[in-house]
Image (cartoon, rainbow, N blue to C red; front, side):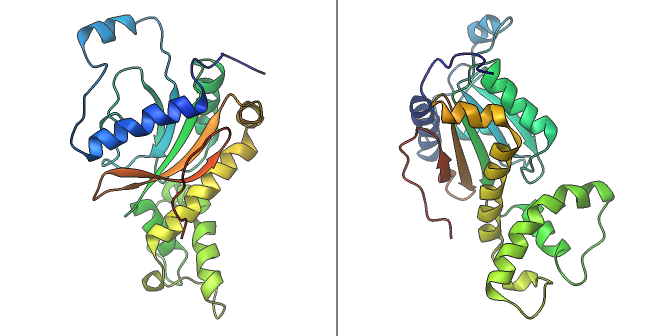
Length: 226
């Protein structure tokens, strides 16, 4: 299944995307594509070059932090950016129907979902609803991975002994890998050179999205993952 032909290369999509974030960081946002004319031209079509899957956190307003406007980003979000069938379907739709050339998975520091997953991995976890517990479960392998790399005396994590931001970076990598495993459509598009997938962690204080991982035809300098 090839789907829509991208209008730009994955590298061009990334360069434009991250340039918007840099404008936001520097306080030079241009607020593009937010005028009445743009709204009108999008009534019957949309052509976003970037699809974004991120955490639902209220501090991650994507069009603001990446200085984009109407029709620029195709966005799916949930608590802790946990891959689910609806998320995979949304990203596949962006690639096959809308011609998106880039998928960005957006994590962030000080993530409440990651902190909750750490708590749920401890000896005496807080009581949460069944839906929340089920959503946190895919984050817990990242907790266990970091915990057991440093502690072998017990499988129960001590929240005071773990860096939640480091757990979040591990979970980010797991999310990207899970999306590629779950979707042959996405993996085939990457393999064909039509799509890139980038995992970014957003730093709340400075407002910068830092690339942690990248798959596909992309030339990106990655930040250290630990």
